[in-house]
Length: 116
Image 1: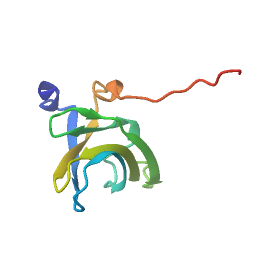
Image 2: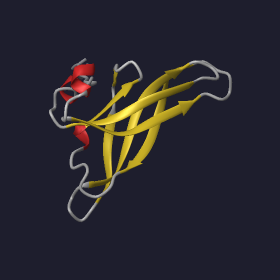
Image 3: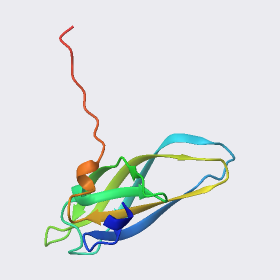
């Protein structure tokens, strides 16, 4: 993974820092955050990938909230789950994957409805 991070196809966008302040271990807590983007930086939210400090991919759901006149994304809502120990800080990094190599490895949830 670190070799991939050194390529031109990997564009770091921003860090997301979560701090647990109430002294409670958190397990798979839902996190929702809106991220603004400058005009022309991002055209598809599907190119966004989130990883933790150990470069492990974090399943991420995205939704475009607003667009610039050139049709690039202005605001994107991110939804993911985070586990964090009491009174600690956890950092994630949001990247744009131009190659599709990492974003193709995203985890997806699917369901089937039975006829019963």
